[in-house]
Length: 316
Image (cartoon, rainbow, N blue to C red; front, side, top):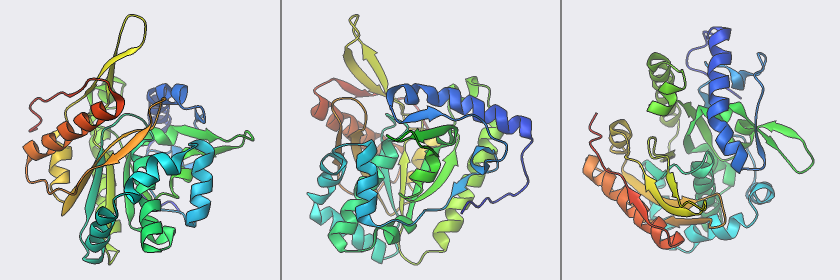
């Protein structure tokens, strides 16, 4: 079931314009991920409307979730679930946080449209198996902050059946659709006022949803502003990767949580991996940068490629 904070419909022209722009931005991802394609704007589809900033989780059991994700990500359990399962003390600590009503943020670099989804799904499946808890109970307390470009995407399965991408992602947890406050978004033609209004409503909805739950929540975010820049050699092979600076707004957001779990991951290409770090408390921007430097170092170790976190003033 979809639910919005503000039910006033946005002008249809703006709806279609934002949907089209987001589709153009997401096209680079659909070119790399075979099962994604850009969706045509549909005036009757609530997921295509600008006033939609939230989609509630959908129920599914652990086995069905694993079977579903393996269709799109072969080897998912080995690559994305086992790294969490191999750290039982971490899972115990995270479960204790939940039972103590303490919220934890999962943060990863922004490599792909699907990175934060797969990183979080791997954790949820591992926790469900570790605790014996029903997967949907964990998904109920999982909140994913994702780019609303995903609303401009369809998923095409092996039989050619087309589904809204967001409707599949709802099995992982509650979705909040934001517009990254970045030069790329503004230069695409989406105004700062539209970005700010969208993100304020999404964050209010997140606070509202979390307040309804008795146990602690997981909030997952692929740090906005950190879209990886791949530097290539003349022959097209990858030379190195640069992770851009986390925005000041994102850093302040992470400081609200009892703990942060940094996860280095790659969900595209030949070298897929997921490496969860240790729980940390972030008190200021410098500690956010330290986490991202650690993620860059882990990524370099996993891929064998030089990876650098580009650090500049993000206090604004």
